[in-house]
Length: 303
Ligand code: GLV
Image (tube, rainbow, N blue to C red):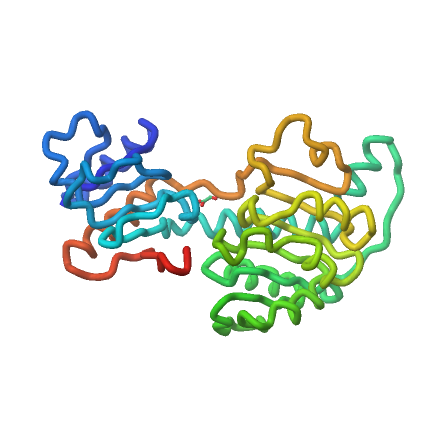
């Protein structure tokens, strides 16, 4: 059962070492494969167009947390996503930072700093700033715990509505109940047919007036023109985005110079090479044992 990794040389080196330590075969150069029938798992961000060259492929493993970049796979091939634990910690860190930056009016202070203005703004206690998290998977849960520890009242929304300690979680029909109480709304949703374009004028209108938006889901979930209109009307006060629509954001895009918006270029997380490789080892071992591999996705749900 050989894994083929399609990645950069530096990552391939780490994966090769981790697989050697685990006593498992790995290929990191598709050109060097003697017998493509030996490849059972393909780890990549995006696979090559024609997967039929690997007749015994059992699983495609995304090296990131998301799988929306993947094409539709033949039904017999499983789709897994990386469960490298560093991913959720990095996104949690970024989202806590973004939440605190908007909570403490940093975009306004950055705009004031441009003009050399020394001027304090009113301060709000975290206990009086309600946070809503869209997406209560591994990252959402970790983030919710951190924000609860900081004193924010947190509500969450997920498809399943599965409960999480210390957080009121609402299921599919409860979106409005989360939005109406979200002074800061944080989107961590995976990109699916249901979530494409979800951050739009209707959703912004359901938030309390002057709410703040934190977006670390996927760019295609955000209608940037609707966000601009909501900022102009005061419905939204500010936004911090790690993902944009389009992405990469063109150099001359209006959002770069909008003082109400802070943008980072899709850097909230990067999969640690060693952790990613260790997870891939677990995937291969599970497949060898005939078990469900960790991180397998539900293809119908899209994540
Ligand atoms: C990054 O966005 C990822 O999916 O890991």
